[in-house]
Image 1 (cartoon, rainbow over the protein chains, first blue to last red):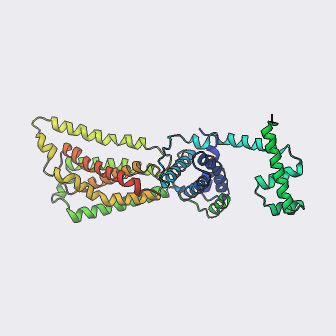
Image 2: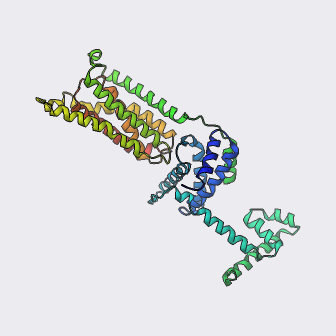
Image 3: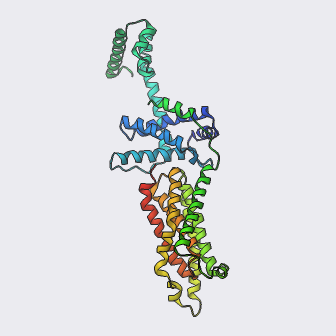
Length: 179
Length: 212
């Protein structure tokens, strides 16, 4: 049995009764799985489109979920259908392997956790002020103008600082200093 | 649109779903299909003239029970085909029951002493039986497709075959009220042929028509 099954199923059952909060948590959780599922099978732009299409399909067809059946298998069925649809639309001759629901709810969690840990380990090597800037702009999507206002720096020096910080991190990685 | 905004939007207009709403929708479509098929049959062929007497005969009940059983398991198959992740193998296996039953009954009738084999198998309407079953099934097939498209079939050819099995069996059930054949070999061969061909049509059409 897939680890998240019980939690997702609870959220889904609440959502079917109209609980918008549970529904939002459910969709946010599923988005992570869907992103890594499509990222491994489609190019970047198509993958995010497929994620959104699948979320819309989950929403529009939510009445087809039968509480007597596993929720993860239901989501996987829709995700796989949308993947095949995407292949068909681009007239690509592709075989979709007959994998199982585990493909959608499997290793991505671990991969993501490792990636997060690597990034934060790397960022720790920057001085705190720079670290904050890189984190804000590159990870959290704060705009340069916003960051400049927060720090009291000019926009161009924010850009330069971030650029230099990333460059030094890249050099560190190349030299293997993370060992 | 950003995915976060999409999620906010979707959860913002979430409406509760009544339990069983989907099955009710499918059942309504199936009943509507059956009514249309019955009207088509009455308009095209009409009831058999001895219906009052025939309704109690063994042959009539053979046809009705056989086609009704296939329609019932076919409906179950369609209900599952429209739900992602639901396994269709179980209803498909149950479909073997009526087929096995009619085969045994047919074998018994053919093996009876003095049986007119040719008469039992060919009857007097074998040439028109399957095609009439298919024609009568078409309104039900259309109604079932309509409902299935509103569900979420993920294996379209299989879903189409399921819809065709159901519609074909409804066609056979309705045709039973016109057809005067009563032998199990006839029903087992010609009714089944009509049902199987309708299933084939459903499979071919399902690939394209059931996309959502």
